[in-house]
Length: 282
Image 1 (cartoon, rainbow, N blue to C red):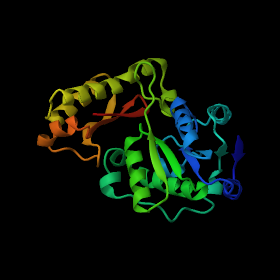
Image 2 (image 1 turned 120 degrees about the horizontal axis):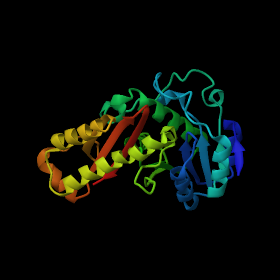
Image 3 (image 1 turned 180 degrees about the vertical axis):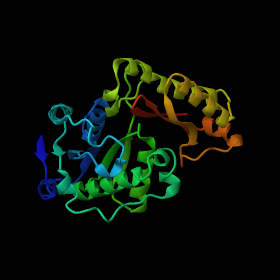
Image 4 (image 1 turned 60 degrees about the horizontal axis):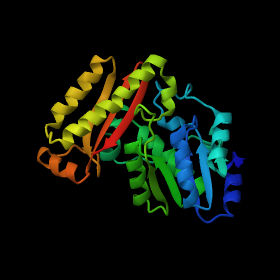
């Protein structure tokens, strides 16, 4: 496994390959990331994983400075998973001057749900992903489905810019109790870790209610958020949306959409100071 820190060296190395498969990460890797690496292995002739904590997607009050950086453990895990190249640029390498040119995704995709609670987040994500795509030149790129809205936004960006990249989503990996794997789970205290599974349980209960015929989604969502709040959470949203565009379904379409696997339930909530997200397709 090679570790490359400059764009010039990366391009020189990848000139020898025709179909790079790319997994962008911010490091602090868990089994979900490593599953993407293994999934990428048969899809390309070289597997590239980037490790870069992207300042552009953090709000001023968020955890950019304290985001866990676990370089040695990440490299050991990546090598064991079959990664060929780790691209780990410094901030000055990827942003040698202030990034005046940015990607601004459309508001109907980027200013709802995560974008509503984290303004500018998807602009930062799309800008760094586009820049990493320009560095790596992948033919396949893999992103985890846990970040459901992010995956949708990136797919649309790739389609609208006619990039020659196949974007593939990797299934959300979960701990034995159902908690979605996340780098931010490391922030949880032991008692919070036990409580954290309540988010996935709430989403599962909402999905089961919709499958059973519930159509009053505002009431369902309000009840789920209230139940979490009573347990000490600070929920941002628990909501049922159309998979196609993440908009709220019309009430008389809910049953048909559920039967045709057209819905997804998404949630985001803070437990203490840790914000967790999750989703479950219906």
